[in-house]
Length: 186
Image (cartoon, rainbow, N blue to C red):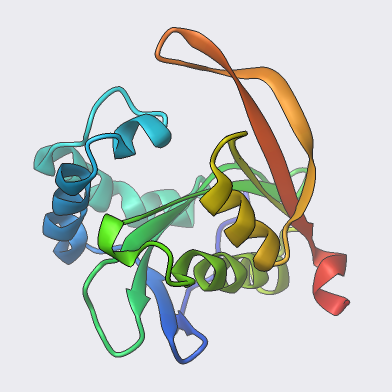
């Protein structure tokens, strides 16, 4: 199975930086979940993660990245090392050269364009450097902030997958947005 290339330097546009997630992010991740009691619901999780769970994820991160299973990146303001959110690269399908993204931002970081820039930075890296052909994002139909950020980042809205996910005991419709390698040339 292929693996992700090394991310030698953080990705940045001068205002927003994306780097590999690290153990030092755990306190800020825990605070973000505390500040937004519904964050775990939007991330499709049963409950907020504990520090121990985040520590175990951090311990497995390098192995998962090397095995091509996925990776987590931290969103920062350029010049700062304070975690403002994270992007998860998951459901990686190397045979079809595609992966899904999930993103969250801490409440105080929302509405400032960080999601748009972070999504563009990681999608460009995955398509140009990691060898993927397609990166997609799924979100609930009413997540207007993420829908706008993804479109502004170059993702194209493809449609609604009706009853696609099961969350909190109910079937949920989701919007699928994607960016493909040929979009970068445009």
